[in-house]
Image (cartoon, rainbow, N blue to C red; front, side, top):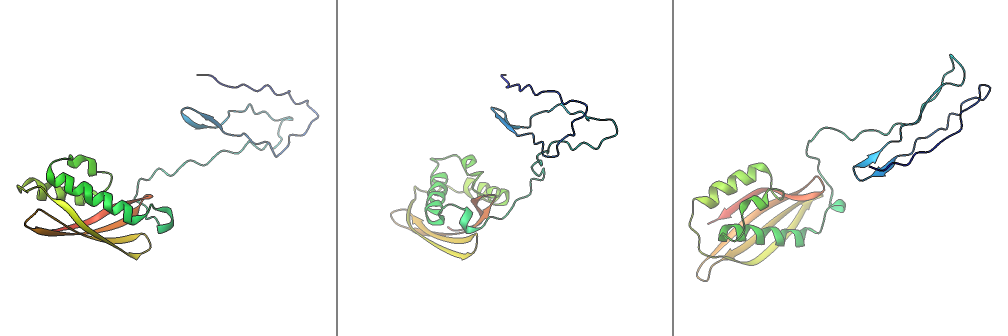
Length: 172
């Protein structure tokens, strides 16, 4: 690991420490790292202000809702998700690839619904998207085989900066 070392002159005993000393962060291949300055008071019993310390990111992993402006286009995203769901039903795509696009509750429901049925090969016929609220969209899709048509309804919510399916209802 390479590091840049800065040599600063030692303050003389009669010099007052300045309060505007700032340790600037250094970007490394491991992330953002604060510089570790040497600190010493110029005179004993003198209040010395240390350089600023960056605030740590919150350590909680709760899901945070995201508004419409911070999310990708819902129409394109929903088309890709519906196509991926149909590919899972067709057996072309493994269901584990949907983990980041659906909530854990939806994933467990999908696993039980898809594994117990023997489906013919389906294709997507139409998709309709309606944004009901900021960061919330409802998607309806029609898919089917050559002889039959089926429906799917899905609720998408903006969570942690991306769209995630929080509810899926199949009309088999």
